[in-house]
Image 1 (cartoon, rainbow, N blue to C red):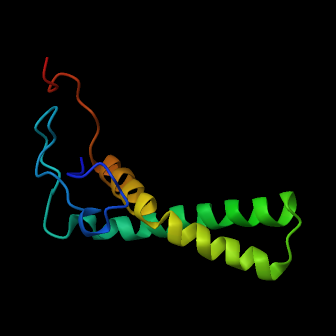
Image 2: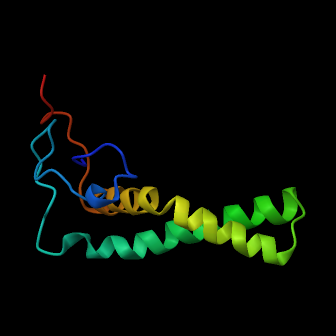
Length: 104
């Protein structure tokens, strides 16, 4: 789906192929299609932040100051993964895999 498999190559993190290499499905359904993935990105980011909170506060018994720092660091480190994951989730709301189109 993405041209560069490394999500941490930030200059190319969101560069996508025009079509699926397996079935030929066009990824860009309409102009600005992936703007909707921002909503998904927000939800996924909240999930990562809650996970960081639970781990740092309840597992490591960190103070609120360190919990805040752990949430910020988690969101910054996982930002490229969250962006890519949200695009994948967004496109799967509107398209599903069709194995009859897949190359054999």
